[in-house]
Length: 193
Image (cartoon, rainbow, N blue to C red; front, side, top):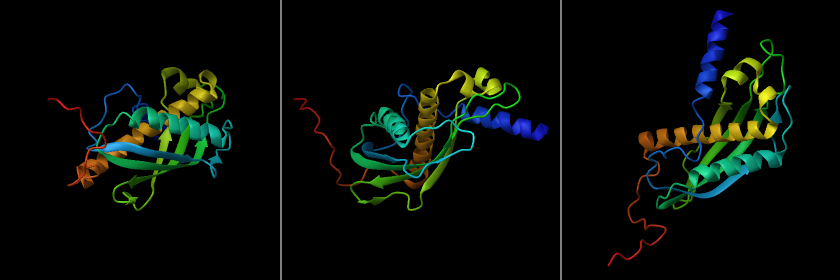
């Protein structure tokens, strides 16, 4: 029992560190520039005790969070997101200190290289995202102090943070987003003469 409690605390702390808000400093993602941002949620599965969210709500929340964050990158090469929402659990109100469900989201991510006309990741990257917890939501569950819309936004921003971490790992390990020879900038810089 003690190990399970420690594990839950650890997961909550990890979950609390992944949000990527638009104001945070950008990562070094080479020549990345956001092209298309396609999110689908047609085959999403809802957890057994979850609040209900529509396909449109998920598409809107994730599309908005991705645009807010990734449209800030001004590299010279276009990359496109293909994201599908696979499953979710939006915590309902629980019983404080007895049953405090946490929200979670499962997504599949594919990244496309526009110039090469192919996927960067041949195998879909599946990510499981947990909500950011606060001292209040950890003890009583986010269903008590967050609306469904706040939960959707929080999970979407955490998803963006996790996607950004994965992209940075791939950039450093596999050279994703590195400058390609012969690539022209997407916009012409102003004449300085």
